[in-house]
Image 1 (spheres, rainbow, N blue to C red):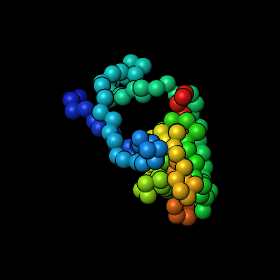
Image 2: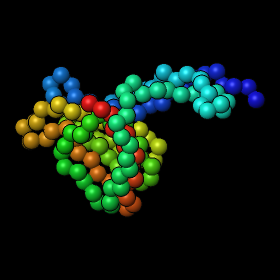
Image 3: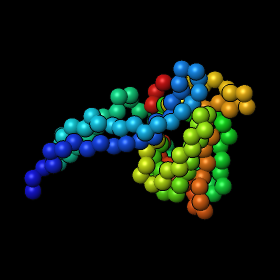
Image 4: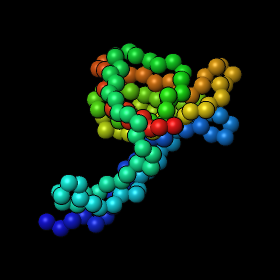
Length: 139
């Protein structure tokens, strides 16, 4: 079976702080995939993180859960495993994500707006809990 020679692209939602201290989110892409073997298996496409993970955890957000305005505690990758959740940033963008969609939370250092909103708010969507895998980075 011939090996695929076209490197994949993985898109994700990136939550960040602009120069005015406002949290925003936009689609970005991971494109630095390279083929390599892991443990002697056939080569596969891998893209290494630029930062070293500090910890990985799992979180279960109950039905109806909403987290008030807050910043991510550290730069972190968030991958929903089941259920749906949303992230709303200070610029008014609200993104809903489900299983397998990826988000990067990098909104540390926001400046509170006139309503006291700082960072983002998030919560569950629908009638099932949202199960998330979170990989936090060292600051």
